[in-house]
Length: 550
Image (cartoon, rainbow, N blue to C red; front, side, top):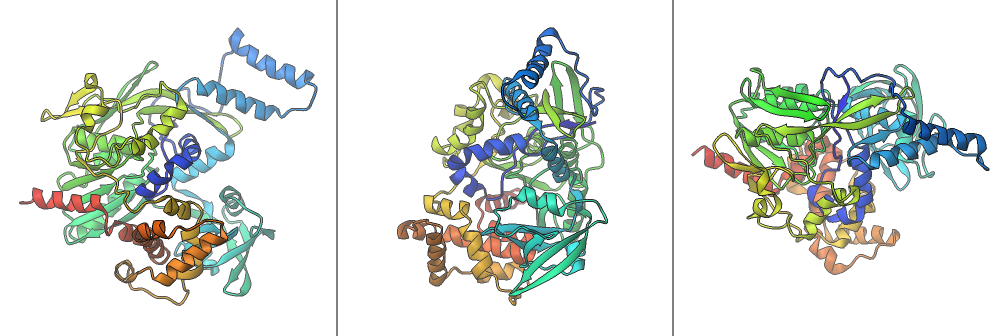
C-alpha cells in the first residue's frame, strides 16, 4: 500500500543551511511540501487509482461553483489551475504536511525514493546557464557512450539547453524517458563540440551517500533519505565495513529529511534485539499499529552513535527516537526538526496525488515528537530558523530540555532517563553550531554559486590526478590568488566582497571548496571525507567510543 509521511529535503552542509535559512524560508516551505514522502505498510483499502468520494450537499457546491464558472464566466479560465488552487486552500486548513502533488511532482518524488529510473546515469550542475557534467556513473549508459565529467551539454535531442536559463526539472524531463530509447546530446569538451547518442537504461542509485572507515575500528555511514532500498544498501555497507575491522559505527542522519517509513523501521531493526518496539502509529480512523524489531539485525552489538541536527526529520527521527528510547546508542548533535505525522497517499487517475495526514507516530516510550503547528504553517516552517535567532543552535545545550519541552509530556527510557515529546528529539550530547566563520558574504557566495563557479572554472583541471580523497584533504590550500579570483567572480555577479568578512570566512570557504573538489574527483564519499575531517560531532563521537572502551 502507498502510505506516506512527509519529510524535509535539504542540502548537505548543516551550518551553511542554518546561516542562509532566514533568506530561504520560502524555499524551505516549498521543500517541505514537495519533499520526499514516507510509505507506510498497512491494510487500508482506501488506496487506489481513483478517490471514491461521496459528495455531500456542501461538497457538491464546490463542483457546482467550478461548473458555473466554466459555463458562465466573462473570460476564459484554466479550470485545472482553479481546481488545484481550491485543493491547496482546503489542505491549508488541516496540517502543514497534508499536500496535493501534481503528476510531475508525484513522479519525480517516486523516482527519487525508489532509487531507480530510466535515464543515462549522470550528475550535473547548471553553471552560468550551462549544463556541466560533474559525475558519470561507471558502467552506465552515458559512460558507455563516452561522456566524461567536465563535459558541457549544449543541446538535448537538438534542443538547446545552454543559454536559455534551463531549470533542473526541464533537464530531467528531457533526459529521462523509455528504457531502450535514445537521447542525442551535443557536448562541448575542451574547445571541441561532439555528438553522443545514449541509450536510456534503468539507473539504480544507492541511498547510502558515503560509507568508509574512520581509523581501524570505527565505521561511518551517511544517509540523507530513506528510500526503498536503504536497508539493503545499509546492510551491504555494514558487511563491507566489518570486513575492514569495524567495531563501532557512526550513523550520520544530519540533513536527512525522511523517506519511507518501512525503510526506517527496517534500518532501526539492524541495531535492535528481537521483539523490541521500534515505533507505533495511531489516528482517529487508524487503529494502533506496532512495528517490532526482528532477530535479523546485522549490527545489534557494536557501539553506536547517531548524529542528528535541526534538519533531521520524519523517518530519521523514528530511527533516532528508537535508538534513544531503547538506549541502544548515543544521540549526538542538535534538536531534530520535530515531525511525527503520518500521511497516506491517495492517487488520482491523472497521476496526481493527495497526501493526507491520517495518523501520528509514537516512539517506543510513547512520545510524539511532533512540534506544534497551531500558529499556522508559516510559523511552523520558520521555527527552525528561529532556533538560530534565539541562540538555541549556538548554546552549550545545558537546560534546553527544561526550556523547550513541556514537562507534562515527559517519558522515561528503560533505565529511567527522562525524555520529552512535542518538539523533536533532544540529543544526549549537544554540539552547538560554530558560526564564527560564517558571514553574510559567505552565505551570498554560496547561494549565488560563486564557489561552484570557482571550482569548475578555475580549480578543476582535466589533467589533475589524485590517488585518494585523503591526498586532497592534506594538500588543498586556498591561495591569495584564489581569493582574488573569488573576488573577481563575485564582482561579476554584482556582489561586493568585504575584505574583513572574506578574511573571517576564509577557513569556511576553503573547507567548502576542498569538499567540492574532493567530490569532483572521488564522488560523495570524497565530499564527506573532506567535510568531516574537522567536524566537531565526528570528533565527539570518537571520544564517546574511546571512553566506552576503557
